[in-house]
Image (cartoon, rainbow, N blue to C red):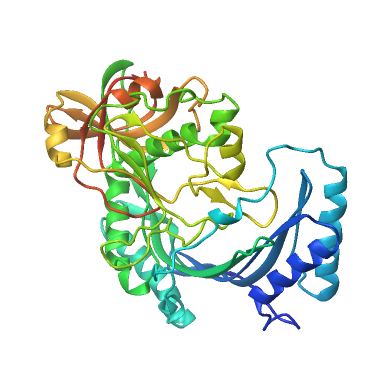
Length: 468
């Protein structure tokens, strides 16, 4: 049965000048006794439809707007947030943040960045396109329906579905502080996905999915191609079995290899480093990976299509201009990833990696994080392996950033004599990130920027597959 939910931003705030509002809140906080203040305002619209077996299952359309305020009273700081942007709501936001600041502990490292550090990229980063909302709702629903239909019609063994989906969203972000920074940018997104279920002759079922996500509607892959690829992936999982425990080369498909790059970013994050909670602590300038490994965190990237990457923005969560940072070059750790607070903790400068929600202090996040591709085709990488495991899906969160120990549930395809053969499931792959990074022995040439964290196919030697 279809469910629908519609929520819109209405009332006296619909035409608010968000930049002026942010500046006004800063002025109010300073007048109330804040020595410094920072405000972030966000607004956006979202549309989402899920179609299952041809029928609309859920349909949601919503709009949202909110503000966060961070205040400093000397070395004391506090934050508060609200979705009530009426005069009374703003007054309560300021008074609430100031009251919290009076009862927090002093922190010698707290505070906004230095005035000389603020800035933003002025070039058009191509982050926003109106066309994500160019289609009427009935045509958006049809895209989801077509993706699912293509999956269901691909093979007689595709007997069921967890749905076809279409999503679209636009957003706007404003950041202001009492040291003179005022910036804003807009973003857009749309995506199609399908998740079919395949059944073999014994009644065993397998599920897989595929999707396309872009900033510009015209760049979406066709719903038919999405459905067909999702079906192919579900079908290849049929007949999956466990394998005996053994040490073999493991090949990570791009969609899972990206998680290894994400783990390295987490280990190189300033929060982990200053707390001595990372196996990369004290490793600056040291070789931590194979010489073929170069990892870049680029917040300024424009993709070959001419569109800004999903991790691209003109400024970070504290108002510092974004940049391209080489994290690992030729296997050597070049830098940690820092916001202002962690930079001060480590007696270093921010790398422009601050992230900011409406509430709380800035965190640390990546931009477009990727491993430079190699020259080998995936087929060439597989051809060199007499027996091994091609991983297409990972489960669980078994990566310990303190020790580097790594253990995750996995499924995929077994490699025999350089060819993909039968499906494998219910196994665990285990190793240690320290050794895994050094034991990357082959890098594919198949990098595609489908998300903000990206990797080509990777071969890692020396890991254990634990199964039957």
